[in-house]
Image (tube, rainbow, N blue to C red; front, top):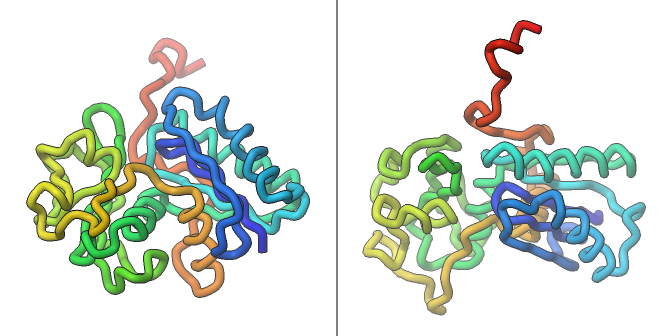
Length: 238
């Protein structure tokens, strides 16, 4: 089944997969241009794979937690595509996608468990704590033991585990990574661990959970807190 995977929880990414097999992907980090970049990215991956959108069998989308504006661009786009094409839309936690992405990139360095942390703005992070059962299987060989939740970096209960993700990169003093003296060592190839969910890994994660079972969510944004914009009190009763 052809799956179009989208994630705008931090970067802007789109990927096309045949089951778990990646056909094409595109990803940009520009937190202020989600709406401008997502549609061209979708067109690009479809064109690169030579696939017409009417051939899609499903849409997968990261549902957060993430800041309000960027996240809703991806979820709204996924819902519109699903409605227009008559295909199901499957949500998956963006922190789950980040965990699978990180484990795929740094299996040995994260085998003892780790924390994923995304930038939640307001000097906070969205976080989840991950236990690893099989580092050779980034899609199924791990489980969440804490979170998803939002907290100040210094309040994240890491239990001494290394932290990865854009939130961890921003607050390294509070959230040290594998190369900063945490229990696991640095990636064996010396490469930096990813900071954002990879849309291809997100799509493969959804494909795996569709096939074998696992947590899939409704395509609705997961914010964990109220948006910054509120209706003024003087207008609230009108």
